[in-house]
Image (cartoon, rainbow, N blue to C red; front, side, top):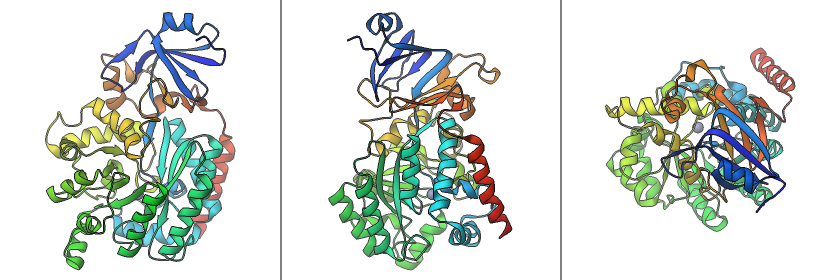
Length: 438
Ligand SMILES: [Zn+2]
């Protein structure tokens, strides 16, 4: 049916991820917040004669990238402490800095900075685990980016909460506040098995069932974490969580650099999703997630950057480049995690992990119009035999040209549409000056 408020996007290539094929001579129709149609361009111009057409010469459109694990506000700690092992980095640098600086304003400013970086590099949906999630969620809502905030839960006090019950109560309040927002979801974020005891984990499971809130937890991040649990409790963290009845298809286990057959069987049996954060694991020398082995077992693996303090960027095209190379090195098999599979980790697999696969993750009529375009007009992407190969092995976030979320244009010609960049930079520098002077 011809409509006047439709937008027709005509790129060189369309990667829908609904099948293996790349469409050429096709257009995608956006109407309000959804994808109305994908059809041959000649037909599109007839059927949608009154639509505005955006022609993207030598560009590819694809589903927006989904960053399934991060700590957005930590963008303000980017480059503060590098080249340190996980526990030294956490205990001697990050946790003290957080204790001193983290506040609602810090989270609002840091999250806004991260959102700008994510949008510019093609992320249209992210998941976040950090203090003051309501302040972060407000920024995401203001800037029209889709996100799930996993409200943090710990046994010990921080500037955000006093004890596990207090954190859980705050998670529920945040959920109540945003439960009708079209772009924002709130979940439970028990930090890790070594920072949350049995009782709150059981409580989280039960509340998640009642309220339909998803759960994200750092799990098996290092060999030390698993060995320490074995020494103290004679069981692996995955076994402990299983016995508590914690696992389910709404649980995302982040990192999983340690996964033996027992762990993988547990994940598979309960439909647990694994979130792979290769660059953070490499930088902190945490170990290697056995991506191919998990996939062979039928476990959904999605991709995240982790916080910018341990990465140190939020570029998902860069992350999937690293993921593809690392999977081959770790499995000693050059055919492991081929390019298209890597792209799925950063799109449809992320949507599945976040429980949003009916909404996003592929380009399909009826799904939300979360779409990005990649500009191939660059010497680094020339010549083109296979655009999918370039997306994984040659491109990076700086090639992202247009970004739409729920049909709304957020990035146009590599520029943010709704940000004051100078103000954003000044605010970040102001924080850095204060933190450095302390
Ligand atoms: Zn993390």
